Length: 529
Image (cartoon, rainbow, N blue to C red):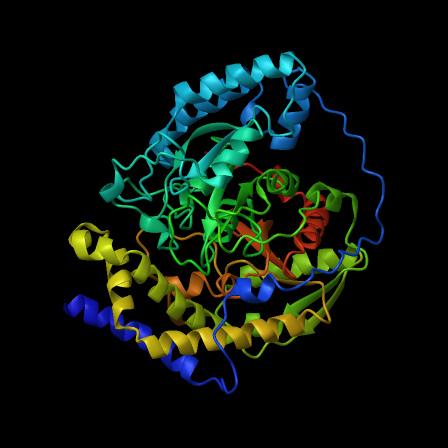
């Protein structure tokens, strides 16, 4: 009880931050009640040009297939220069070699994967290619339901839970011909930022196995970065795609709330949960988004909006894009080397033809507190029965967060929802003058497993608030956001740049990220695992 009391004391500052805001005349909202009513403006694509003709070369048979992108593999498979069977075998071999060091997977499905690979090979030889993901190996964070495969959500409590239906995203990837290698490790119940899991084992960063992967989609991050999977699907409630994406040197895309179906995915916080892709290139994220985006009647917040071909955004450069840098970003704790990398990346965007300007969002420093209050209440409500029946079995740090949510009053929750309305409105106004926001994804590179606090400029900061200060606000308003590698620390650890767009304008986010990625070429570095 003393431990719980101490944790409750930690959330009081968040409640007080919400109380500071003037909420007169504001009603509660959620991202969907705002975003779904917007008619997304046409993405301006000045400088659009014909797509470059790609000349692909089949790799030598001794060459590692596991670091080819999904796009590269797809083109080679379609031309029958490599086989889905060969590609899947290569990935399974790599998993066998690396899992003792990384612990990316909870459940491996080698027999199922090889059966799917042989089926894909036969279909392609018959001229029936299902698309660019046909025959491509991938992993799912272990909270996406797959019929007949256990779904643990990162907790031993659910070790024997086997769903009898597929999540919409798993089904759409299956229909696209992608090959599921297994279910990926995560922070228990997806409620954490580090990727530490005492029940199934901690996840380890391929750039340095003593360091965190980030969470909660930590297994997704380590598997893709190490070449165990070509891509993975994660979820993001406060940064859980973008945090491991940045720390593992990947591209991680959180689409607009309502763009991807949440059906058949274990909930953390209904109004902030966003599924999305994690890959080594922006092009791969665009291909995956093409396969999984779109309306789903099984998800009450899924939106009925046309799904564009996101790969068309790759044909344009950054010329004409208006990029805003929120001045409040750099009033928060940040390591100097991360700040420097971020500014260099924004200078690169400027060189590529974008205009960079400083903008202000005075409510921004309040956003993390607002989102935290809402998330805690929703997570506690969803897991109420679990807390009641299995409380002592829940991973202790997660249990504390869930139990602390009980002490947030209904009034506090409604006030936080009213504050969300204000944050959404101010965010929307900001985009009247810019096409994108740019800044660091995280304020620090990866740090050792077991760390609870870090020191920045003589200031000791709790890692939960620190690691979500740039990511969580865009779960609160539901705007699309992507992280793309923008450099490395002095210790050779990846650093990420975050780009944020208007609701349902993922094309603009993809366009800018791709232009930067192709100019900077950080994707060519591999971890020394």
